Length: 341
Image (cartoon, rainbow, N blue to C red; front, side, top):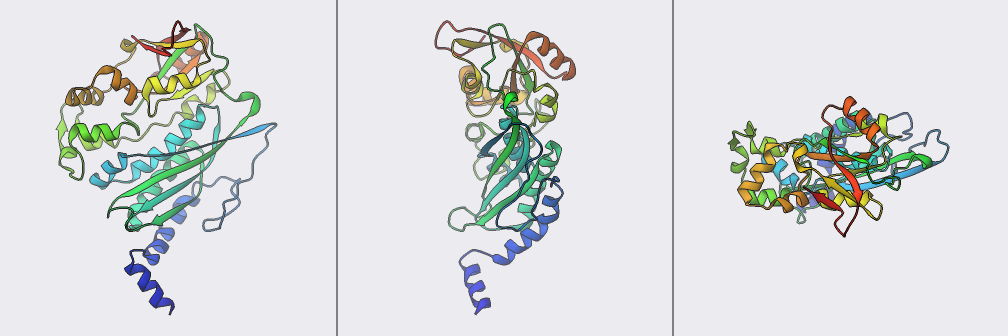
């Protein structure tokens, strides 16, 4: 009876044996990310994490996905970098609040379970978690035939971090005259891919991704799969003196910087203070896209914006050569919160 039911479920599109194989492949990968505070092994109904010694801890959580960058990964049949994307995106989000990452969970939904493909995704997540000192404490892999086409999948992450209450970064201390720093991105990160796929005619054909552009020095596919950069280790030493941070995700400059600015203040950005990577100019020309929309959709080469006092800005730029002074905080004369000049 048991064997017959397993066969019927497999015929319906769900392969339990493939799920078991997937778990076997990823167990050691995931265990390697565990911190001493992790109290459960893989496979329990819930994941236990013991909070360390804090005076007045605040838990900071966030959830995000990789978006349609996954379509590029499927067409290129390269899946480890999107795992890095997921973790780094989530770590950066809670970093904006001053939080240190504790643990992460993932959700992978597929049309047909391919154990080695899932293992590659998890390997990328585990590497990024290890780099950030974050435990990949658990997750879920769901095989859902009929919801996703063969080869397609979705990837979502959930992160929890911690910060002492008196060290939470909310942006409320930002004042006129503060410096606006930009930390370079590694490319598009995880935003704007729906527009990019339209611009280059990428749908279910990998041919456009194999084209080599001289300005990129590699194929378009290789450029588009560059992992989302993580800023945690770079900025951790300065969390006590940073006034505000904006992770440049969906919405670009216009959508993200105002999230940390107090009322009555705007960020004045000098567009000439940094050189955007060639991929952005290629997208702009290929799609005949206006500059204003480019800055609303893409990070334009700046993955994290940091707002701080002038003295702190000098220290950060000395420690992080890639960081650039890209603007300043000014009193707002109107409704425009980000002024790009």
